[in-house]
Image 1 (cartoon, one colour):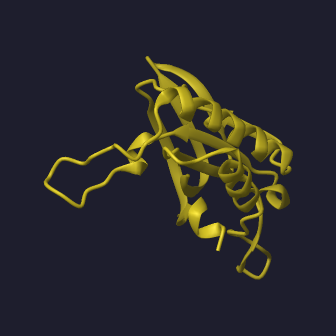
Image 2 (spheres, rainbow, N blue to C red; image 1 turned 90 degrees about the vertical axis):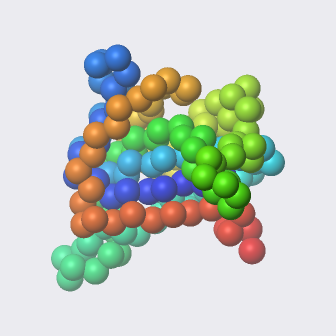
Length: 151
């Protein structure tokens, strides 16, 4: 499972011009579910992201987590994070989980964020053509692969 976390001052997602999720200060999380992922991957990744200390404290050091700043999370499913660009010019998405597997894991990941203390968890619409807007704060952008967390 792959996540791109962007520290934002605001973010929203719309489908067909209608806002489906919106947060103020917090994380915009693009989440890619791979074929071999399971609930363990989602649980480990959610715990890591919920505790990620990338907000600045009074000494201007990245030392505060979402809960410390009262931040929210906007989670967007994004199978293109699983792209393989090693051959040719058109990416292969064969590593991405099929929707019938990916959607329940996406939902489970979101529930695990809440279980780990994130009080506002907003979502996009799985499989929809979404328009995501954000103001990246910093900018701060972090990539995490759940496979790296198991080491």
